[in-house]
Amino acid sequence: MSTSVNINGVEFQPRLLINGEFVEASDKGTFNVFNPATGEISCKVPEATEDDTNRAVAAAKAAQPAWAALDPTKRGAYLKKLAALIREHKSTLHHLEAISMGVPVNHFFHADFGADEFDYFAQAWPHIQGQSSVNTPGYVTMTFRQPFGVVACIIPWNAPLYLFAAKAAAALITGNTVVLKSSEKAPLAVAYAAELVARAGFPPGVFNILSGHGLPSGRCLARHMDVRAISFTGSSRTGKLIQEEAAKTNLKSVTLELGGKSPAIIFDDANIEQALTDTMSSILLNAGQICVANSRVYVQKSVAPKFIEAFTKRIATIHGGNPLDPQTQMGPQADEVQYKNILSYIEEGKKSGKLAVGGKGRLDETKGYFVEPTVFLDTPEDAKIMKEEIFGPVLNINTFETEEEVVAKANDTEYGLWAAVFTNNLSRAMRMAKALESGYVSINCSSPSMGRDLPFGGYKGSGQGREGRLHSMNHFLEVKSVIIKL
Ligand code: NAD
Image (cartoon, rainbow, N blue to C red; front, side, top):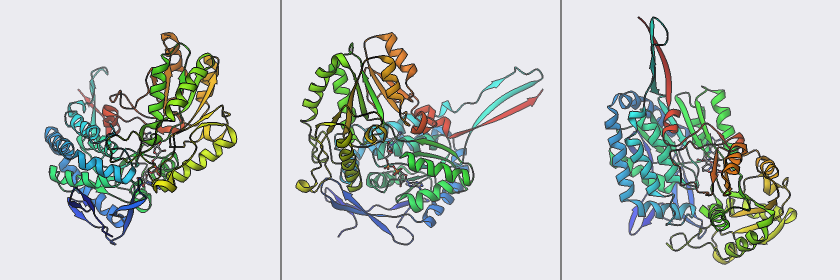
């Protein structure tokens, strides 16, 4: 079996990018990446060892002072060049995401979104600003914003290119150097982006890119004494482990973007068609494998029969298809583990709620890891499928009568990432926005593609800190207070 991927006749062999050089893992170790639409191996990818990870951090540390000292317009110029290369190579990048994690090639979360991040941050350096004051008699006081040094970025598999770009671009423009580790489930597009990083001409050591599992490479980054800040997106379980490692070692600054169990709340005065379209696309996006998916839908009783009938009818017409086909609306689940996990939640759901649509996998027919969009009704609030993140195209619809009742139900979760509210009553919309325990509340819409300049992050167990545009830059900058006696 070939270790490389063939894209339109061109062979691509993923490698690690350490100190400006492409290398294999030091022990030559690799892992298999499977195409979830066929169950077949797409490619073998280097498994970064602790030694590789340490070398990447050492290279980043050595490169950081010169990178931070560079005129920020020059740092921005590297980012801009990388953005252009990502756009130029977007069909290859889309192909690689499709054959590693099954996302359809027409998915909006892809290369353009990533390139936008590099373009945005290329120009964002004037926001690196301190403050000054003469409030204290006899003194001038001021603050400087300075980079942490080496920043580690650890990303999940469900939006690899976007998260690669959003994290690294913010860290780089602020004068940090980066070691980024991709997810073991979807390393291909990021490994190809590493080739583009090299072509953009970043100085050696400034931007290092590793592939591999959480152990050893991810954990090594989390506990490394020379990593001063870490930006993590992934599951709550891993987020807690990273926090523990940071606490046990150098108390590095940690931002955690974790899971969700996001409610959509539909009042009887809402535009029901809009609510239906948005909540459905939220749970089908990325085959339900998205942190903000509206997996708990609450509909006010008077409009519930109409909403449920239309919703179940329409969602039953959606089928997973080949992610390389531009017509495909929903791809397979990312891998066998995801597939089995989702099916086990569906079996749990059958014990507690009423199965209205779907409920099956299609592994036998296609060998791909496809799960039918699945709708449960009237599941008790304390059931497992109402409490835990399923990360698949599975949702429950419950009904409610009053605002107070639905707020209590929506907030009754350890998660608090995203909540969507549909109502045409402005006062009610604002009351709901205030009452919901959620890092993000969307009114009369539900799409993570909007509001990219807003802070993004979770209440409660959905995370710690906020990322997104300027908020990410803040996370990657220390604050120094300086006082001068006159
Ligand atoms: P995961 O936690 O299994 O893995 C995420 C990353 O952490 C991977 O790169 C993995 O290799 C690494 N990792 C695993 N163990 C580690 C360890 N001990 N130390 C350091 N790194 C380690 O998550 P996943 O399955 O890849 O992603 C799905 C999760 O991500 C879902 O819970 C989803 O909600 C969440 N997510 C959140 C957001 C957000 O912005 N809040 C966005 C996308 C995904």
